[in-house]
Image (cartoon, rainbow, N blue to C red; front, top):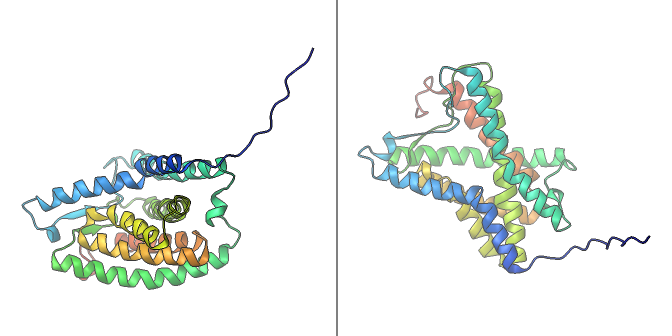
Length: 262
């Protein structure tokens, strides 16, 4: 009795058409869809009878007010669900013979990544806060409330988890993965940086013009640094630190300092 021998698996580089379709699918399931949602939300805000500066965009809102354990379950669910596009990107990279490590998302240089990320967060965070306060005061931005969670024991850990989820999702997809795919599609570096920056700004448009412009500038800086470092690790660290300070700082300071809109 004879059996057919299994043929060795071969890795075939997808065509440009398939790569483009894959990219659109990934963005359609993640931050591209968020960009469309943010645009609709911004149009809704513009057509409200109340001025932008007097409207509030709440991040990390309670999912089950008055029911803290159910609320916690929802918060953890949304954190986990928000990371699924990163899992998908990792799977697609493995299919082509690469991995998330190819994008510099690993722990090989964790101390260097954290050091670079801390310096970058300090530079970006302060200027970003100043831009937000100016845009909000000028009426170009909604008042952003980074935390709408109740004062329960899990509030701070959930806010930190949310900050890291945002950072991992955005930097892996909008920088590492997007840059790789657009490069494979033959785009030039100026076009790649512009596309990444516009995408980053688009899904922050729900905050107003300040959110759009500020995040586009951040997108340009992050893409240039990724081109230099070839690692998203420092960008993830910087983004996570910026969001952690914003989320936790707001939760602790809102209503207690006069300079912070709430």
